[in-house]
Length: 452
Image 1 (cartoon, rainbow, N blue to C red):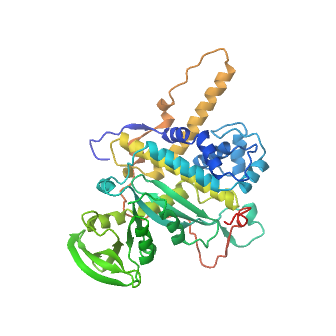
Image 2 (tube, rainbow, N blue to C red):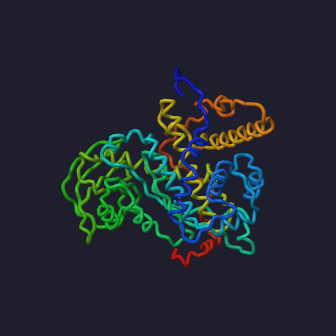
Image 3 (tube, rainbow, N blue to C red):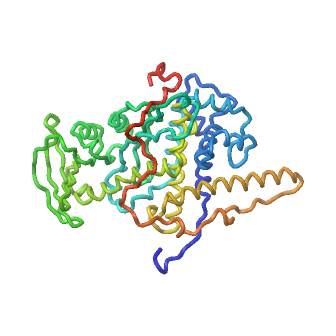
């Protein structure tokens, strides 16, 4: 922090407030009704199931059995559990994970309705031009590292599946998260399924995988705009030159082109040459006044934000360690992580706004564990106060202001990010290694019958 700038204390109860405010019983019930087929309400209610999984993500217990023991009395912020461990694990195996995906979507929409976009402030002008800016990317989930029941008797290491993310750059949260238990789900297919769900006029960013004439034509047909790295193949017919600029010590060239031998798609090609390296971007935004070549190059720098999001999910929110070995439970953990990530990023935006700094100045790797610990501490305080009330039924007790507790506050400078913006985050877990045998998780019960 620069000399002379104050170092205020901030409270860490924002995530708990967000979860209580938006992840309500009514929201869970509406998600249930939207997907209801043959599901039955059992001892483990759906609302309690969702609350339990989000508590697991916040606290990262050594195992689900340990979390269930804590939850047996409603301790440590877990929802009270009266059923057996076997009933819970059976519910995880049988409950369609589509329900958790619907809960995440409803939670995301509820947060978006009440919270303004606070991230990527340098692109505020583009927010007046495009309703939203989204980044597309996919990732393979890390292999199951712990010995689960499903791994017993097998020498091959199970891979939990793949995910596809559509990340909202201005909000700093996931707009869409797709999951497939099989490794055969094509990333481009997942991306095409998302295109029709995005607001018309939105701008999408992606790497070379998305820079094909066919995908850019699909983006255009959906009333959207795209900026993608140009792949090495694909025919380009040059057209009018729009400009040539000096940019970051290199040369930035902008021109109109016709993309694809068959598609004949009108597009723009922006080429950035820096020494021996050349980066090419294609877009269907033909008017440089609407999206300049400099803005395209600056935007692509922010494409790494989705990589940082994957890093936060896997490394910070412990998504690299799976608690169950079936596809339904893996997806439950995945979407619970997405809910918690949305709450934490929103809390990050609130903290930055209160401190009059940009949200990117805060480090998720430093902040998120503190937010999780604060949620557990606040739950302990609430539990202790409730027990005190029950022990003194004839006494009127005033609840303390938990925000004043030192364990729920921290100095701003302790959560500031290191000045490493622009570098790609590195994960400690390798997904693929030579000489290792891999296998997929079995499909969830009823998947083939339901056509999934």
